[in-house]
Length: 178
Image 1 (cartoon, rainbow, N blue to C red):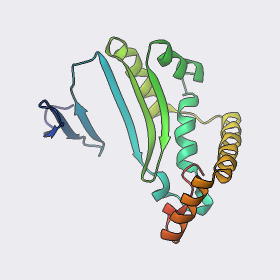
Image 2 (spheres, rainbow, N blue to C red):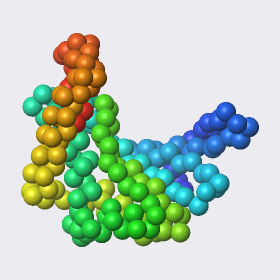
Image 3 (spheres, rainbow, N blue to C red):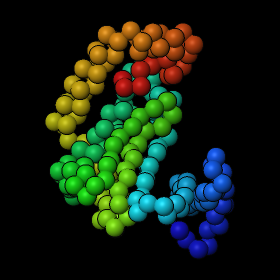
């Protein structure tokens, strides 16, 4: 990060005797970074989390955060889907999308030996994702099927009814998946 930018360091304690130092950095563009160094494994874990999720949705836009995070891994302006997820998995890493109540995004973990190439891929995903029409249609079909499965699950349906009762006038009463 830029040297003229001061960072705040926070120490988080684990239950064991070792402590983890986490550095919190606020970049000039408003992006917050949390950096934790643990050299016990040659592995890097990254989460790109964006404000959104249910808190930013309304009934007519319900599911847009889930759809967006899913489509982020379907290709960029310079890479097809086959150069994203399969490449990272072939190197022993993993990448996935998520959407929740307050955020959506992607997370990845990979071996530190592959960090340069994978950070290039992740930067491309965050900055240059494209949303191909055919992938949007496929994603909507998958989400529709997942919604139907959720309706058939008594626990999921009961939990949704409880949330709708508690948050009747709030987006938190909507389905996370759409």
